[in-house]
Length: 190
Image 1: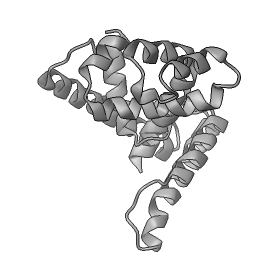
Image 2 (image 1 turned 30 degrees about the horizontal axis):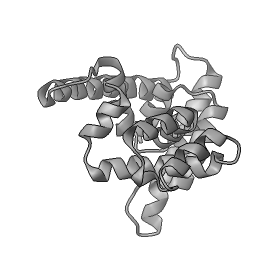
Image 3 (image 1 turned 180 degrees about the vertical axis):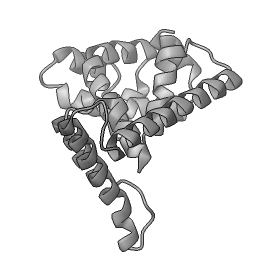
């Protein structure tokens, strides 16, 4: 479905959220790209007043920034959004019934639980099919996730990973060269 059709179907609240993101990147890139300035000038410099065709033109100019924005949001979100996104990427067409999505979601969670069991086994057993260095990486990451998740109890707060903790864990997982699946499984195991 192309963007102009999507813009005509979404409600005003959804559209405004999208436009806020575009507006932010428009302001950041306006000086470097005169086409952005031209599009905004055509709408009195107020993106909310812009016609859908101009919004599409602006989006096409800011596509890379928007993609980075989405990737960043997904990377540091709760891990369940990863499961949902994987379903949409793998199995989502333009339409999906609630029942079909529910089946796919349960199947994905089942696969995730199997992966968690596998990683737990590899961490806890003395003899596994992974190298000692890799096992050490898993243990380090698991201990860090455990600390980040349980330190809230000591401060009498709800257990959750804060933005700062997520960014640190993300950097650690990249440094340890963990895949998204390994990172997700270890985090869920905690």
